[in-house]
Image (cartoon, rainbow, N blue to C red):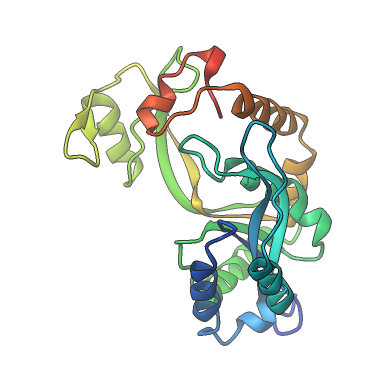
Length: 253
């Protein structure tokens, strides 16, 4: 594939609808790179509704409509904004993976990042080109910023370990406990399974073959539908440990 004439990457940036400042900064950031007009498209992903009792539709104000008309880079997906738990962008992230390739076909890779993740887009394209040349154009490739996480056996939702660092550090956290952002420490969980690698939501990509597999996967679609129901009926929470401690009956995504 000739990256000088073919779009290689579609990067969806999870964006709060009324945070135009970060979108402006992102556009300025992307403009610093010379190759992106040939190899990478950037879209800002916004949920189509606001979370609430009736999940009221998001009616963009004049400023948002004007921004969309001026830049043609806002994408509205079937996910809710302002979810009342720590996974603020989970619904629209899932919606992005379900619809991106269907609505914007032709890219070699589809990626997702947070709006405070500054991606070196030229380097991303170059790295993914190497990956494709190595694995083949039709390979189901899952690529991104790797983190590690353990999970308590017998507890459906509770993670253990998995702060920033390699697998060895996560293993040490599982066995001996680890640091918390407030300076404290969480207890060990020696019976946890793992550590397992996963791609941090801050920066993750899928090849065209991989995103097609995910979008068509019955288990993933069922998970998303169930999570939507749980987010509607569950108990709001503000902190990871508080959210993880919710009983199954009221646990949100």
